Length: 282
Ligand SMILES: [Zn+2]
Image (tube, rainbow, N blue to C red; front, side, top):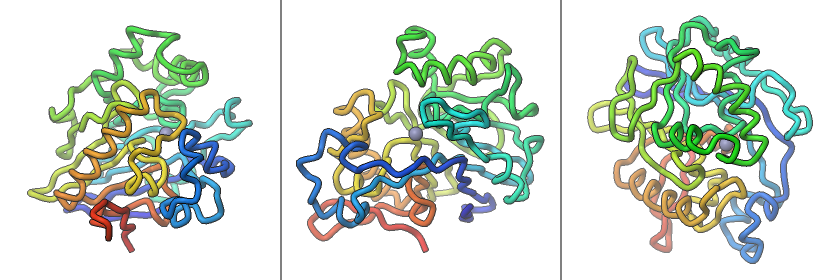
C-alpha cells in the first residue's frame, strides 16, 4: 500500500493480487524485435513483466471512492487460481467495505471488476457504481462477444448483477461523475472500446488514475508497444501518446495500477531525445 496527498484528498494504491511475472516478450508480444531496446532494459531489466492488480481508494472527508475492483475474492481460473486480498488491504489502510460510497470503473476487464459483487450481491452495500457510457454500451450491445471468454465470464459474475439491480450509472467523458470529489472520465479507447482514465481536479492541479493506458513504464517512452490485452492496438497506442502528452503538459500526478508499487505514482517528464519518460515519485 502506498499513499499520496492531493489537496485534501488521499489516494491509496492497494494491491489486490500479484500474478506471477510473465516473459516481457509474451506480455508485449507484438514487439519482440525491440526486446533489446533501452526502455525494456530500464523498466524490465530481468526480461520479465512484473505487474499487479491494483485498486485505488480516493479518500476525502470520510467518503471513499474506489477506482476499479481488482480480480476479486474467488480463485480465478484464468490466472491459475489467483484470488484477491482487497479486504485485507482495505483493513490495513484503515478502511472497510461500509465506508465505500462509490466505485468507478475504468473498463470491464476481469482484473478490474472482481470485487464489484459476490454471489449476486454488491460487495460494497452503500456504493453506487459508475462506468464509462461507451464501455457499458459496448458490453450491452455485444454481450458474450464483447471480449475474450474470461472477461465475459467476469462481467457476467461481477457486473451483470449490479446492472440488474440498477446500481450502475453510465457517464460520458468530461462530464462530472456523480458523488463527492470532482472527478471526470477521460476517454482513452483502444485497450477496450470505452476505456477511460479518471481525472481529479484541484484548482489547476490534476491527478489521473490511468486505468490500463499503460501496463509498463516502458510504454511512456515507447507508446507503440502494446500489451497483449489491448483490443485495438492502434487506438491504444494513439491513446497512450495523447495521454502522456496531456500528463506532461498539465504536470499531472499519475497513478498506474499495473506498475510495481514502488513505481506506481509518477509524472510524465521530457526525455533526453525529445520523447517522454516515466518519472516515479519518491
Ligand atoms: Zn488491467
